Length: 310
Image 1 (cartoon, rainbow, N blue to C red):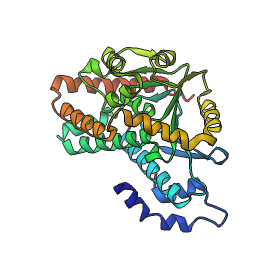
Image 2: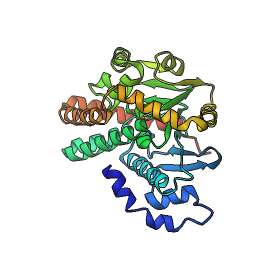
Image 3: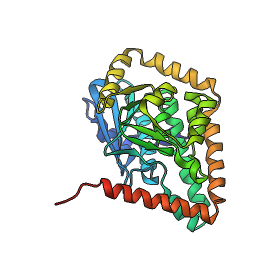
Image 4: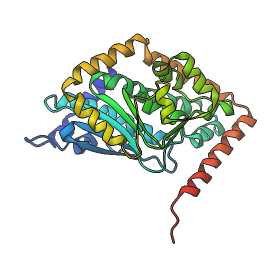
């Protein structure tokens, strides 16, 4: 509620830019949110569908900058729907470009915080990330249906923002792995997110195995809603949206009812963030060196995949 009160006071300036025929939706959202680095917005008006395209730099990880941009975009959608109830955004969908969907959390940021003993910095990152995840699961407080399309490799904490959405689809080339356990580490939000989809026992197996799963594996485990051929993820979402348009309110209500069955997600995510910060701050020098090696391995992987300029 505090978030909504803070957003309402900021509506007037961008609202004045709207024409009598209605606003350019993306322009309005950008005017309200301000700069959105590492995030691109595309709106398909005929479907009332807003795409959030993740464009993290310099690595495809959930940088603090990207998380801040997603958070601002979410709040902008809430404000837009309050300002223009006659033409709301009904669906918000996430996707990414490139050969990787996400390599997870921002290890370089974690390491910088550890080097400077910046506990507050880690806590800010963790709690902002979990607030984004909570809004995804709640459909921005019951205003939209959230969706995600994963087209390629997704690792650890990079899986959870997508799986936190109401609906998640993965293309056949996509793979999923939570490797953190191999380095005495764990992703911030994975337990409350995965348990709600796969059940406690299956979630524990996934998180403690360190194994890589295909989209078909994740469908069989109940983690994703559909597995589709390569390049078909966004079209699957468009078909879902077209089918769901006439039953939007009922679906939102059902998502809310099922979420309520699992208890207070916002509280669980807050506790998970605190637990994660405490754990990170107690990593030994040897464990920190392992994280450094993973960060370096990410850079080598991206260099190998980068297009060569002749």
